[in-house]
Image: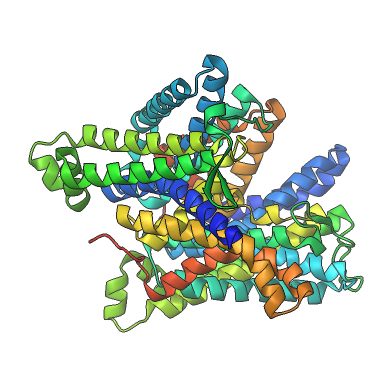
Length: 310
Length: 304
């Protein structure tokens, strides 16, 4: 456990020290990159909740990034830039979307579940493309970033960075607490043996659906952050490759670990950044690397670092 | 009326194309228990091979044969190099690894042929229209696709239901370990099944080339529709894949053609303008959700 505390101490100090360091070295690019990494870490953490702990292989988690992004973008399109309202809508709408998708998907299992979550996200993706009012498949610029009555100014890269850092730590802490609560135990029990869970008198369906909705809400928050980060709203938020990337972040970081989503988001986005800086055809290298990672590196970074299977 | 007939034929044409893809995917899943996202890549490979070979050889039948053989070879190579190690893994690993393969194939195609769409053509004797009834002319090439698709469906039924190979396939689907214990080379059987599935995907791709655009990533657009097909039909069932494909093909085509005018008549033209296209592109997913809400294992679920 001391190893874990050491890791979190070092991680928080390093992440908090990045903005002054990056500005001193005149490399604001890194601020942008790490902010993006942390936003995806939030999304990956929410997926980890259902995929890692709950064993629900959702291949459509990008849907909630999209719903959250559209909630902020659409309100801002009509001149409503109140951040509290925008983010509340983002979280509420994606929780609602997750409830609808989950209610049908969780009735199925295995490969059906994978394909259905993918198909629902694809449905939302096509909905986004057909909304001409909001730019169709080109998307649209975000009119203004969310405003928080002078409390935090998202137009300041450093302030936005620290907000994302704080929210990410909050989400990671929350999911850490959730999986260790009674609720979390039921979710994990349903993953390891659904029949036995039912036999002790618990209904896995309701618990799984609740976890699915919580994960959707967290994904919506990540979507609200992402649209503020890019200042651009597009249906590509919901592209199915995005869902695949989120799954890879969870796996690379280490399934069912607290630090996994952060480490996985770092690993994948940094490798993508390095490869794409090196050659235009970086995906021809990334693809086989990912295959190798799946075949030989199943425990993920956190799994290999900490050993203790929580 | 003519318009409705034409759209029904278009739906049938999309349906048989989806079937060619779905048959391979559902067989591979039913027998090897493998989820293969890279199935769409084989479709793309087939389309590119056919377009390039037709240009190179100048003979359409030759290009088709070579493209089929080429896709078969690519499929077998993929199975031997990458997928064989995944049979024993869970579905999550299979999804992720084959997702990696998609990135690889799309980029490889972009390196070889460029990122821009290429256009392939059909020879003169397959282009033009046929007069099916008075005042009703339909493109010959699309009829050829329907005929090829139905012929393949018949052939598949014959192979699976009436031959020794088909018997092994059915046996492999219901109890792999037992088939292996009876002395059947199960590894070879897997490779043959995967190769056949790849060739069918390649066939769908090369048929699709002249009517859709040929570009990197083209496989994923159809792949997700094919998922809808096999989920509706019941995973592992060829019969389910056939009826699911025809259903999805017609619903999608008719929805795109008639949903807007129908909505305009029922509601208002402005509402139809706004909701029509969105609803049309979501229709097959709604259909899938409805089917699953009633039958969570699809319409023709294979016996477990």
